[in-house]
Amino acid sequence: MGSGEEQRTGRSGWTGTWLGGVRSAGVELGYPGERLGLPEHGSGAVAGYGRRLIALAIDLILASVIAAFLARTFGWDPLIRSWASTGIFGLQAWVLTGLLGITIGKRLCGLRVVRLDGRPVGPLWSLVRTLLLLIVIPALMWDRDHRGLHDRAANAVVISV
Image (cartoon, rainbow, N blue to C red; front, side):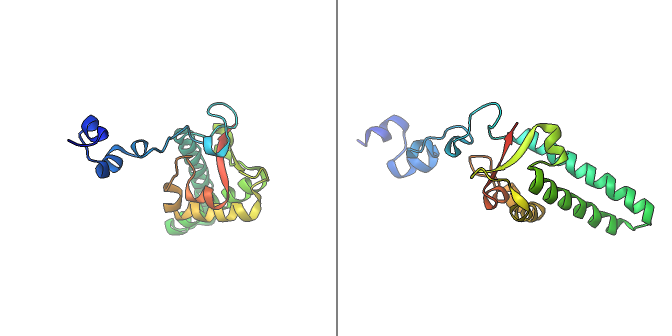
């Protein structure tokens, strides 16, 4: 007959790992942030997707409202208003994350961006993180610790406070 694994699961050895996922390949998955030495729950734990998306929405809406106000004041056309909204979002994400580790949306949602080495994010790494965030695709590619490529590039993680 076959191996014990094949008899138990009905899959052969070479298909057992890719059909069964990473756990069947012997890789144990813990909670997000475990590999980084962060707690599973509470303050300092990796922030979940929901609160991060709400914080992002708040920041985008705030930037859009400011751009609309400026467009009305200066008579900008919709294209300039759109670019201004993106620029305002990027500027506030860069400056506030670099100086304080938070944006307005993250503050309202109880989140903070921290570097894994314990240092502040700083203006340079915040700029790198923000530029990758504005490209969008790197921010959508997450690892098992809920870190997008923009966070990984800055050696940062978004945590609950």
